[in-house]
Length: 398
Image 1: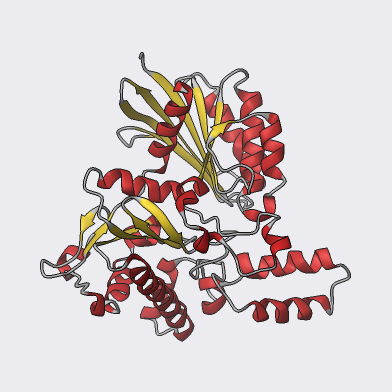
Image 2: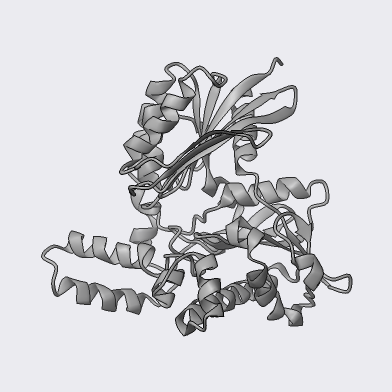
């Protein structure tokens, strides 16, 4: 098969990441990558670099909206400086209960996924917008949706099913999970020696943990939406429903409509809580670590809450897996925050986890456990774009 180019579009709640890969004959070569960060601000960041890391674009334009952000990407892609794509792959957090398979995008499929925006309210609107724009930008070029939830489809019903009345379960309310493409890439990188009992922690502004047996997900921390699970940068994680009801009633005292009150509650749970809410300072772990050095007690509590919650989830997954062979850290915090990894593992000594301080003093891929550790502990950066490319190539061949 002759080589061809695949464009990957990976949107977040405030960013658009993209890359172009050359694929064919089993080879996968990244040609360029870039991103627009800071959507919704007056000081965004737009950059593109080639495979050697050379910056081709490095700008700080105002990016007041997703339309402006995507126009920057679209203008660059149509400039003639980069390979025209033969196909486009889009990351999508959740397609809802009716779209669970990676597949070719049609206008009708986009409408169907948009009807389940509430299942990933921070991510779906921009992903849907980009899909529609990409179909116009590259007419006739096949576009494919690659779902984060796809990896988690192997969870047993006992993990998926929520303890709620059946009428809501019938609406599709269940555990879907997120970060699935990241977890899939961890399993991919561990081939052919994927451990039987693996726990992977994707720790970043959005954070989750998955229990994986023989390369297949059996449980994951995020639920119906990415707001569930462990505490994240601005999200509550799992919380007593009574807390949300209390907050909702307080909001309703000064809000005219139920819809407006629900929107405000969503903002509290998804954008104002988590590390930001506890610290009353920042959702960025780097800021919190600096504040801790200065004696900030709220920052210390926020980080302690983060570490404590992760330890609890890991412990529960060890019980679910019946033991543990390997623990993997990934994501921005997982890859780069040495202290978080050390603090998490320090509380897991009962599981036989022993970290090597010198090995842990690293950012990027590494084995960081000590020789006498009963569990191998690794740092593995995710390869989400590569996984999307692999799925696109497979779907093109079907």
